[in-house]
Image (cartoon, rainbow, N blue to C red; front, top):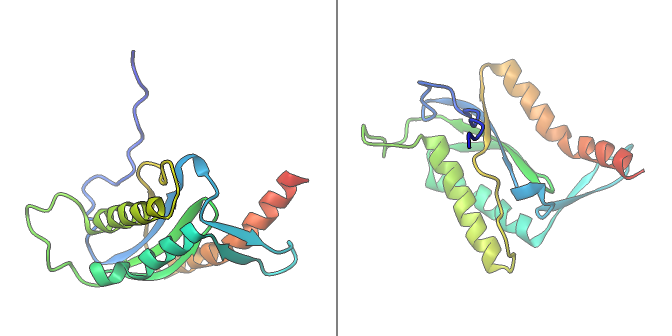
Length: 167
Protein backbone atom coordinates (compact mmCIF):
# COMPACT_ATOMS: atom_id res chain seq x y z
CA UNK A 1 0.00 0.00 0.00
CA UNK A 2 1.38 3.40 -0.99
CA UNK A 3 1.08 5.99 1.73
CA UNK A 4 0.86 9.66 0.77
CA UNK A 5 4.17 11.47 1.03
CA UNK A 6 4.37 13.81 3.98
CA UNK A 7 4.91 17.44 3.01
CA UNK A 8 8.33 18.70 4.05
CA UNK A 9 8.09 21.31 6.78
CA UNK A 10 11.56 22.82 6.56
CA UNK A 11 13.43 24.64 3.82
CA UNK A 12 16.19 22.59 2.25
CA UNK A 13 19.69 23.83 3.06
CA UNK A 14 18.48 26.47 5.52
CA UNK A 15 20.30 26.64 8.86
CA UNK A 16 17.62 27.06 11.51
CA UNK A 17 20.35 27.93 14.01
CA UNK A 18 21.39 31.15 12.32
CA UNK A 19 20.60 34.62 13.59
CA UNK A 20 17.06 35.65 12.82
CA UNK A 21 13.44 35.56 13.87
CA UNK A 22 11.11 32.60 13.47
CA UNK A 23 7.33 32.31 13.78
CA UNK A 24 6.45 28.95 15.33
CA UNK A 25 3.06 27.29 15.78
CA UNK A 26 2.64 24.11 17.83
CA UNK A 27 -0.74 22.35 17.93
CA UNK A 28 -2.17 19.95 20.47
CA UNK A 29 -2.91 16.40 19.35
CA UNK A 30 -6.27 16.29 17.53
CA UNK A 31 -6.59 20.01 18.33
CA UNK A 32 -7.84 19.22 21.85
CA UNK A 33 -8.64 22.41 23.73
CA UNK A 34 -6.62 21.72 26.87
CA UNK A 35 -4.34 24.75 27.22
CA UNK A 36 -6.63 27.73 27.78
CA UNK A 37 -10.09 29.21 27.49
CA UNK A 38 -10.73 32.44 25.61
CA UNK A 39 -13.45 34.45 27.33
CA UNK A 40 -15.18 37.67 26.37
CA UNK A 41 -17.54 39.03 23.76
CA UNK A 42 -16.64 39.83 20.17
CA UNK A 43 -16.72 43.59 20.82
CA UNK A 44 -14.54 43.26 23.95
CA UNK A 45 -10.89 42.53 24.35
CA UNK A 46 -10.87 38.79 25.06
CA UNK A 47 -9.04 37.35 28.03
CA UNK A 48 -6.98 34.18 27.98
CA UNK A 49 -7.57 31.98 31.01
CA UNK A 50 -4.88 29.34 31.17
CA UNK A 51 -5.85 25.88 32.31
CA UNK A 52 -3.53 24.12 34.78
CA UNK A 53 -1.89 22.51 31.71
CA UNK A 54 -1.56 25.91 30.05
CA UNK A 55 0.15 27.28 33.17
CA UNK A 56 2.64 24.43 33.02
CA UNK A 57 3.32 25.25 29.36
CA UNK A 58 3.61 28.98 30.15
CA UNK A 59 6.27 28.22 32.76
CA UNK A 60 8.26 26.15 30.27
CA UNK A 61 8.04 28.83 27.58
CA UNK A 62 9.16 31.50 30.08
CA UNK A 63 12.25 29.45 30.93
CA UNK A 64 13.18 28.38 27.40
CA UNK A 65 15.64 31.20 26.83
CA UNK A 66 17.57 30.19 29.96
CA UNK A 67 18.38 26.85 28.31
CA UNK A 68 18.95 27.99 24.71
CA UNK A 69 20.51 30.99 23.00
CA UNK A 70 17.14 32.38 22.00
CA UNK A 71 14.68 35.11 22.96
CA UNK A 72 10.95 34.56 23.03
CA UNK A 73 9.77 37.97 21.79
CA UNK A 74 6.04 37.22 21.77
CA UNK A 75 3.78 34.24 22.39
CA UNK A 76 0.20 33.33 23.01
CA UNK A 77 -1.24 30.14 24.47
CA UNK A 78 -4.52 29.42 22.73
CA UNK A 79 -6.90 26.56 23.68
CA UNK A 80 -5.41 24.10 21.16
CA UNK A 81 -2.19 25.69 19.92
CA UNK A 82 0.57 28.14 20.72
CA UNK A 83 2.23 30.81 18.60
CA UNK A 84 5.73 32.07 19.34
CA UNK A 85 8.20 34.49 17.85
CA UNK A 86 11.65 33.10 18.58
CA UNK A 87 14.72 35.24 17.92
CA UNK A 88 18.25 33.90 17.72
CA UNK A 89 20.70 36.73 18.34
CA UNK A 90 23.90 34.70 18.52
CA UNK A 91 24.95 31.31 17.34
CA UNK A 92 24.76 28.73 20.09
CA UNK A 93 28.07 27.97 21.81
CA UNK A 94 27.28 24.25 21.74
CA UNK A 95 27.16 24.28 17.96
CA UNK A 96 29.46 21.80 16.30
CA UNK A 97 29.83 20.10 12.93
CA UNK A 98 28.31 17.01 14.57
CA UNK A 99 25.11 18.84 15.50
CA UNK A 100 22.21 16.97 13.92
CA UNK A 101 19.32 19.26 14.88
CA UNK A 102 18.98 23.00 14.50
CA UNK A 103 18.71 25.28 17.49
CA UNK A 104 15.02 25.93 16.72
CA UNK A 105 14.33 22.20 16.48
CA UNK A 106 16.19 21.54 19.74
CA UNK A 107 14.30 24.27 21.58
CA UNK A 108 10.87 23.17 20.31
CA UNK A 109 11.66 19.51 21.03
CA UNK A 110 12.79 20.41 24.55
CA UNK A 111 9.65 22.50 25.13
CA UNK A 112 7.27 19.82 23.85
CA UNK A 113 8.99 16.99 25.73
CA UNK A 114 9.24 18.73 29.11
CA UNK A 115 5.81 20.34 28.99
CA UNK A 116 4.26 16.97 28.04
CA UNK A 117 6.06 15.25 30.92
CA UNK A 118 4.81 17.80 33.46
CA UNK A 119 1.28 17.88 31.98
CA UNK A 120 1.13 14.09 32.28
CA UNK A 121 2.41 14.34 35.86
CA UNK A 122 -0.44 16.80 36.52
CA UNK A 123 -2.96 14.15 35.49
CA UNK A 124 -3.54 14.46 31.74
CA UNK A 125 -3.82 11.10 29.98
CA UNK A 126 -3.13 10.95 26.27
CA UNK A 127 -0.90 12.55 23.71
CA UNK A 128 -0.31 16.27 24.13
CA UNK A 129 1.23 17.44 20.85
CA UNK A 130 0.76 16.89 17.16
CA UNK A 131 3.85 15.66 15.42
CA UNK A 132 6.23 18.40 14.29
CA UNK A 133 5.38 22.12 14.22
CA UNK A 134 4.87 24.92 11.72
CA UNK A 135 7.64 27.44 11.20
CA UNK A 136 8.01 30.59 9.14
CA UNK A 137 11.33 32.39 8.75
CA UNK A 138 10.61 36.06 9.43
CA UNK A 139 12.20 37.89 6.55
CA UNK A 140 12.08 41.58 7.54
CA UNK A 141 10.65 44.13 9.98
CA UNK A 142 7.35 44.30 8.06
CA UNK A 143 6.92 40.52 8.26
CA UNK A 144 7.83 40.65 11.98
CA UNK A 145 5.25 43.37 12.68
CA UNK A 146 2.50 41.50 10.80
CA UNK A 147 3.19 38.31 12.76
CA UNK A 148 3.32 40.24 16.05
CA UNK A 149 -0.14 41.67 15.24
CA UNK A 150 -1.42 38.24 14.23
CA UNK A 151 -0.35 36.79 17.59
CA UNK A 152 -1.77 39.80 19.45
CA UNK A 153 -5.14 39.50 17.67
CA UNK A 154 -5.39 35.71 17.74
CA UNK A 155 -7.62 35.56 20.87
CA UNK A 156 -10.10 38.05 19.33
CA UNK A 157 -10.11 36.09 16.09
CA UNK A 158 -10.76 32.92 18.13
CA UNK A 159 -13.82 34.50 19.76
CA UNK A 160 -15.14 35.69 16.38
CA UNK A 161 -14.64 32.29 14.76
CA UNK A 162 -16.03 30.21 17.59
CA UNK A 163 -19.02 32.46 18.36
CA UNK A 164 -20.24 32.04 14.77
CA UNK A 165 -19.67 28.26 14.93
CA UNK A 166 -21.62 28.01 18.19
CA UNK A 167 -24.60 30.03 16.92
